[in-house]
Image (cartoon, rainbow, N blue to C red; front, side):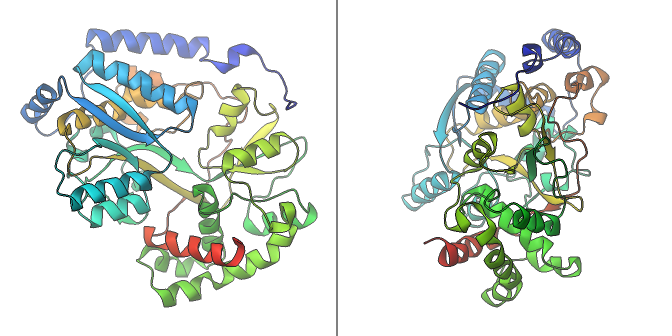
Length: 416
């Protein structure tokens, strides 16, 4: 059994101030008092709403987290009540499986596809876009897109260096974030040099998830950027070639060769996921863990799975960040329903609920400052234990074509 500090049970849910704000906004939404966001073609959207009524949307989304599953269930209840759209959550382990299925359907000329909406980004989006597997462009015609922060969060229009071009709708933000118990790690490492020194000073107490786990691959990309002068970063945002990969990845392999003997089990084994790594930290086996959700530490403290003294931190110069998206396959049966669902998930109400640490804690893609005052109240949350004290710059993801060679070469070198 893990030993964790007990907290005031009230901290696990919205504060009284937040509950009041939520109640006021819910009442305003119900009464229709809040202004609707601006969009280009009211008549077209009205037809979309009419066509969507009665449709069933098969939403293919990762099903590995109870909090996310519960949020999607809530969204399904909302779109059914408001728009007459039925949501079926098809729980998948990897979006790549959905890509393969849609590709096979295209090869078989199957126009009534099995997927209406998919949670996706990165290499999977790149594949679907280049193979003509997507419906669109549609994203920037959604009413709620009017409030997306495309200036402050440029990755809402750029997915792993690939222009989105309206082929997927932004849903949430993410950034590589580390966590540690301040009682055991009073000075967490805030750059790569400090992390490497920390691993040497504490042999066997650090590690990273095993690629091709997403978090493990992201850690490799973070090292790749940190080991390369900024003046040369441009090469990472272009499609990779064999020669460029060999040259630019050489410092990474040299660093890992030196680092692995200092890691947990001397780098001969690796945790299978970030969740497993976080549990090992909670158990005292590791001193550090990592996540791609800056709010996850606060989530885990609220759920009493991590000590209340656990802190979040990022490298001062920046860590890799991106946006995750919603896309509609080219052969979706419920195209109108999928757009209505995507628009609702992008709405201030749904985005604020998703950002709530007590619900999910997934950062919003919206520019909250541009929302009407009543909707801004929806995002007002008291700081929680474990919340990131100060965000570092978000470094754009390398081009999606870098993922596969990184994972393949890592496996060749260290995966046996």
